[in-house]
Length: 382
Image (cartoon, rainbow, N blue to C red; front, side, top):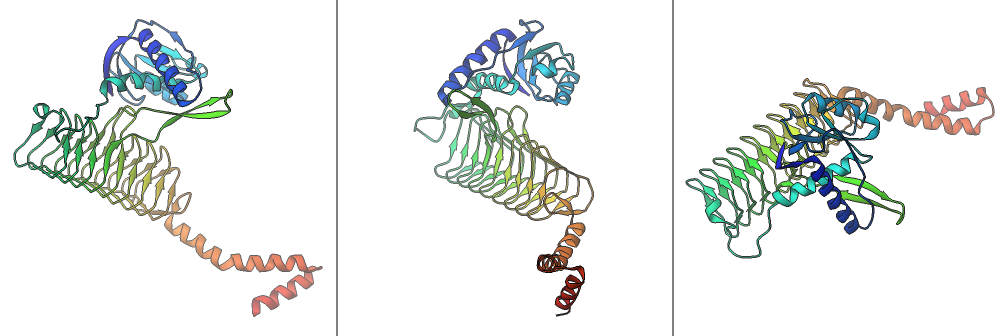
């Protein structure tokens, strides 16, 4: 969840709509959606949360599906932004009804971003604000490294040449941030971790809200501010040039002991369980989850919201589009099926597809069943 400056709901929504109007105009077109408040517009909103989180008083979230709305209400959200078709299906203390709930929520995130996002310094020393930084014993800083304001660096941390640690980040004992790696703002990294050269931890997720503008004939891809963080637990290794995106509101999480190879992409709000292995060029779309001890091999891809069960093995170039059950079973193909089934299908295809092609060619050239039978039998004999 994300704490924000508390203010009345009506005021918050008015400012969010104004911010959207300006942003859409700057993007080239589109209009901010209207809304209606079903409940008290004076309700104090003090934090933003995901629908699946247990919500404290004053929490606001959004829901674009009936099951999400039900979960948000069950988790105690004070305010839920939703669409007219869903509003009547599930009661909540206060509903904000709008034809574009996701877009209106984006406007609220933009207001929070102005207060939370760090400013980039204009030249100067490698310390943005040395007095605000906590540095443990035995910490080493490579040439050209940069440390933002409010950073916490524990004992024995090493920052390589050109490494960047932005505002509010926390780095645990004995962790190494290799040259040119970037640890973005409010990222938390545990003990004894390694972040490889060129890796970026906590950059924005790839999330946009589509806003058709009939007047100009354009489809505006309006950026969703990602204000969640990244939580990396102890003993995690992140390979070179790997990217782990920050969450929209909740954190992207990599659990203890997992290892990510070079050139891996972990999307926003994903969760990688304990002791997993992700090989090079694996890509996980937003909100995918991988349970403990799973192996995901090179160039495999997980689509949005998919789940991989504990101990599963996803072989190289597999496309996971559904849910993989737990168990030490290997999976292959697109869409994914158990590896032994995929291998049988491949063997059958290589054996019988050439024969089928030959049969069809003869079928077009013969005038009777007897002729087709004779010619096909002769061909298969040779």
